[in-house]
Figure 1 (tube, rainbow, N blue to C red):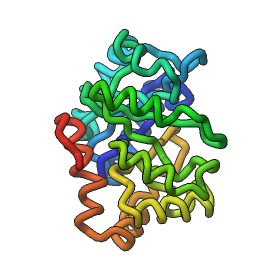
Figure 2: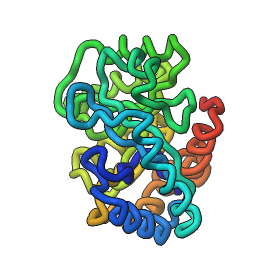
Figure 3: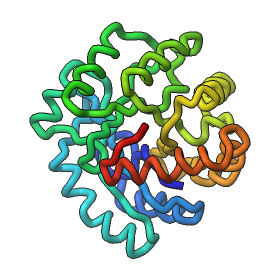
Figure 4: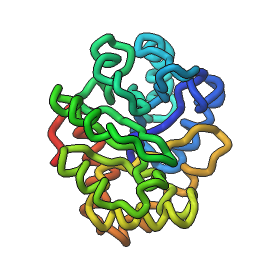
Length: 240
């Protein structure tokens, strides 16, 4: 499996607290078959989670080396950007980054409430050549009875990333039900762990997760959302 959404970068958000913690997380990831990871630290405007692209690049540089040498894991840099009206300007100024410098940007929206301008924010990005990837759509409780919202986003060109452990109930029964619905509607293009700590069990659940995903979407779609689409992002290729 390839992990599109994670918080391994130490000391910049609510994820890994130290290089040692990051190493433990990488070791566990390797043991559970993860071969590639995009580090996606939060960028939340006007909060303490505003580590710049240049700062993150300096932190990740040695990690890229030892991740490959010690764990045979390929590491890349991105952000998980919290939805705001300044995303395009922040990107132009070099404060935030897309996934591995590609056209694809991971974006989170409010978890428990609706905001009116989500579609207009995404439209601005798409109009400027950025493809938004909506992080963990199954976790947005305000939209549990609004599947049309996600269908509309997909029709706009927005892609979506599920949290792997949602499918085995790690985020609760309702999130599990929602992610199943999204998978069956062919709305999921990527899988990520969204792991934040060396103490979490998310990576250890991967064998169970993979079995469940294959049962729901079949082998071909499983490979597409866990391996192939990740590679297309890294190479900045089209995803249909």
